Image (cartoon, rainbow, N blue to C red; front, side, top):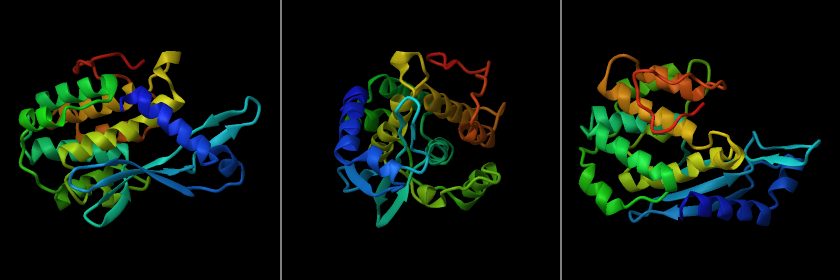
Length: 233
């Protein structure tokens, strides 16, 4: 499924599982659906409604919130933007993945939401290695007082797991902030992921900078030193 198809599918699932009624009754994470099963058996599933889901009574608009979870190696945990940022950074710095090839792959993927996994495997070789304690400590510290889901970075995501997870993590931005309506949608998380590649290869900014930008409730200004494939503001 591309992004548009995945969005339609997810909204239908929300309706079938009484998303709005559950929000009104303050029932959170009562529904889980598997949305991807990777070739290695890893599952990506959606848990909803999330704690930030709400209904704006004046307009009846539903603000959707859900959690994208991964079931891998016996571990069942959520994946956040910060988890993805740490995984990308680890692949480049410790796995020696070609950052510019990964940038191309991400930009292409974010256009439609479809990844050619055999091609990616050929163009993005790297040494698979789990994030080490020093990297995890940096990520935790960058969260300041905000909670950090350490479990989401206790393993290296395979390329298939990474791209399958990305689709459902960033889709939430498209649903609540549609690009077609002039909002940023998935452009915002893509900007953070491209910044991650930049800091993995340059020392003008740090990994901590990127994580704090991802956690910010504001709209961070774009870095003038980095070329973004499309503007986010």
